[in-house]
Image (cartoon, rainbow, N blue to C red):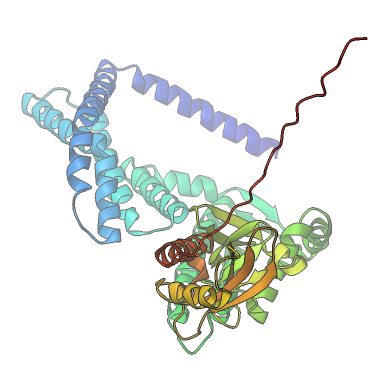
Length: 433
């Protein structure tokens, strides 16, 4: 171990001296200065041009993949300007014949061009993490090849072994295996999303069953891809048996809520108690279910707010599903009229007015019943049915009340309000003795 450390120290010292000697040459310093100036000019040009280009590109109607690549090109306008400026300077320097060795300028041009092409081309991949890993890996390989140090780096990385489990794995094999693992995970996620979209189009399955099958497929594909990738890296999978106990303890203590929500989500999908599109009430939250996730349910309310409610709440609390087995929902509206009104006529007028409201279901007739004789009014309850509770309950009550107001006013039906009579008595006059 000491010999390897001494050898590495000697190599680093010799490399440092060679680098210092190389960078102390006037031609090299001049080229680095030119590169810095060109980068500054490129960023200034990008700062002025990029907003104008973006305004034009945002107006184009393109498919998602093409638009993503185009936006990536616009985001990297400074590198495009740098490549153009560097190519012009390199052309001029070779015309005048100075400096004789223009490797700095040519390498800067090639590295910037490779980064621009690889980074923009990688935006055909939708996943940001995989895209960044892939573009960085390809550019690193191209950069080492252009600098003619790829073989030295490969030999250096292959010479150091890391103990993993019962065997040693070289750093080079580990890096290659991690790249393969990332690639397999990307393939697994892409295939899972594709299958999930296809399953969601199968009309023979219920919405909850489609979501359940899609999530199970994604999990299975990711687990298989991860295990396969780790095997290709050379990691002995038996080492994870030691970690399983610790993971179990962690799940039992720190992750119990996460696991509880995950299991609750599977139960919800299996028993189909709620599904996307259902109108539900949970506590003070009233809205329609937008999406079922592994940990929570997305509920959108009438005011546009989106609540992420843990799956466990739908198992442990009372939930009102307005559209569980039937979309029809009965709505009650209470009102009162004057004792001078004929209750038979009032009931008929109330039901006629209700039928004129668009959202009221016409296949079920509304009913109107007397519920009591109040202090100042005859009290009624009007009952009718709607089939779209997700569009709100308060607004439909308001529309029906407004229809009642109009028809009662047209037929001379009075809606009373309480009267109070206040009698003021003067105090008794006091007489003096």
